[in-house]
Image 1 (spheres, rainbow, N blue to C red):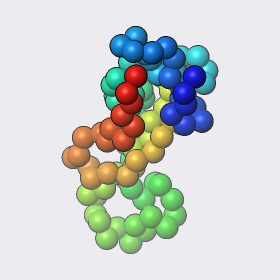
Image 2: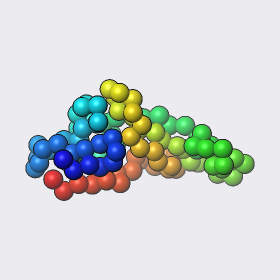
Image 3: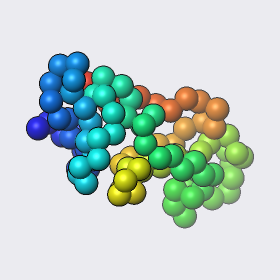
Length: 95
């Protein structure tokens, strides 16, 4: 089975292919942005680490988004984005 990252894999092929977490939870169709089907925690960008914009130069323009499996709560991915931007779709698969 092809893997997206350490936690996510593709199961099946064609239009029936799905994305599955390592715990066995089926997240959604492989033809869609899996981040739209998982739990999201959005916090100020400074929560990403002690050296990330610690002087608040960006104000509250940027956020740290963390994506978790709804079943096992494994952290699946993290993105830094402008607060009002849509969730990124960085992994697009041809199945």
